[in-house]
Length: 81
Image (cartoon, rainbow, N blue to C red; front, side):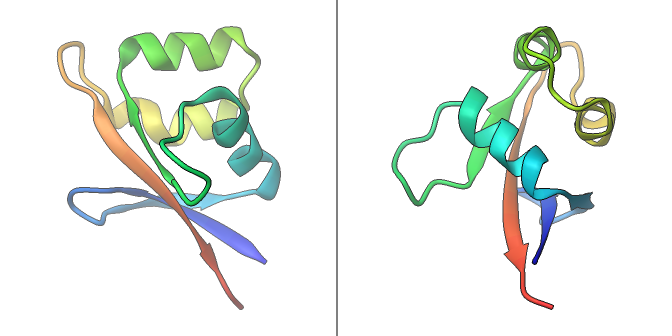
């Protein structure tokens, strides 16, 4: 089973992520309910993820899309192979 990370508004694919990286997002970021798979990420959230030991490859997928003033909504999706 594989997972992919997207920018929610545009549907732009950021890249493939591992199950461990998905679990990092689930564990560290706020979800509205059990079915929630999207998160708002800004510079502060990136710093928090890094401080908490989030995978460097995961952060590298997200960081280029977050500006100093604006964050993004990301979402992960499970892709059945």
